[in-house]
Length: 236
Image (spheres, rainbow, N blue to C red):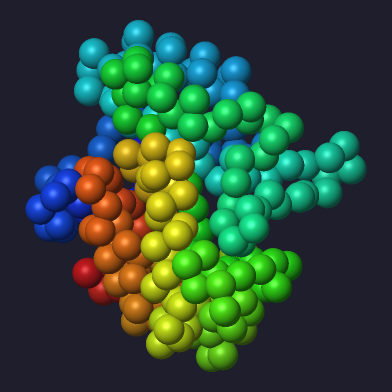
């Protein structure tokens, strides 16, 4: 897995217990070779098939789509994010015919299926409502502090993603809906939650995301990745 995985927690089904593994999961992550926009439904399936044949016998069992599965890029390099009515990233329709089906096919090969996601709400979709608490808009959740050094708790390297004020009554519902989409809709066994590690700046969001995964009946491996400016002590 990519070296940026600095903290991993295995959230076991039913028991709701966080277990720190002895080692990181072994597998394939699309970021380094395919970055964000070049992978699609058919090439991802072909890669997973090759992985199952050649690497699974050696213990490499996690197939992870990193950043980009929810974005499209046109010929001029313009990027379009794809979100649902609740402000949750969804698979780019020009590259993925059916991400849930791809997940099932990957698992059918004997592999685990993983997806990347990122902390916060997108600044272009603040007018959308919070799933389960529709009386609130995503804009109501935005952190009003420069948590972690970014305006409105924004991700230092992805400034369009604004932090969530976890004291808001709809904040937990938002993260629960994000996890429900990744695990319940797309069948993720592994979540790479990015722009998270920067204690104490994002601690409450880390706790909220962890709690949302703990509530699932499915077993999920949760990996937190850096948010910028983090240290070894932050990782602890």
